[in-house]
Length: 341
Image (cartoon, rainbow, N blue to C red):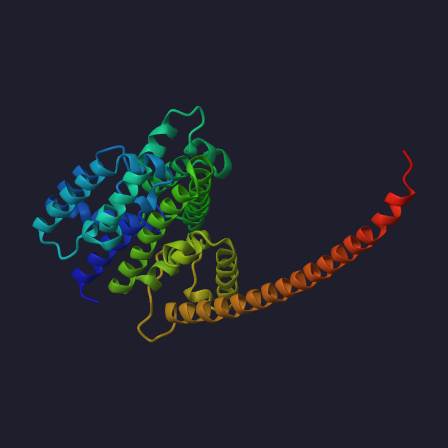
């Protein structure tokens, strides 16, 4: 791969999931940015605010949506700034960054606005509820940031990387929980439509990220360099589907046994890259696909069997209730005749 393409891939991959990728990728990202004055200025301006630009890295979805107008202005400004740098890649032009500012997303946000504003006045906001339920994503992220910043990319122990990857794994699990929690709690407070709108918006962004990864041929690289709980970064369908999530993580764990050289490890001191021979990440992707399919088919078969058992039990219960009602009905005249007043 040409050097410029490598650097472009590093920039794009790191920006796609800066808080979730291998720490060495993050160091390379900062090195690439700092080496280009134009890019550095653009990135400094884009990240100088305290609000997260990417919905993919925000556990406080309600706050993110309330500030969407300002966020989209910053995304547009950063995109135009980096375009002018002529670096060959622009993370703010990715579909996953642009879709949240699309007309459909803005219309959905407007429909949610009254609910979101009202939530800010509550003693316990939706975000407060989800932090209690899932943990504090921002605190874990801060820990990851500080540990990564302190890591020497050229001289470190595998345990240091393993520690960071362990915290990243926790952060990803917390974000999954938070996204699900936010959708559920909003539905409870503002009606089912509110919960569905938030879920639809979040799903659309994650699906856009997968398309970004596919276009950049980075899906396998991503799968090899993030911990198991971060599977939603390249498998968006697991974000709101607990069954698929559990099956996918089981498949990943199984693949780690069969393809240890190409799987998301927490002890690799350097990022893992796909091999051009077709081994490695392709083997992982194929193994994951095959095992996930088998597990899903098995799960669906078990679900069908359980549903059939429930249907039979329901029919049996209906028959018993019907028989009981007939017995009661037939005995009523006799009971009435024997009643004395």
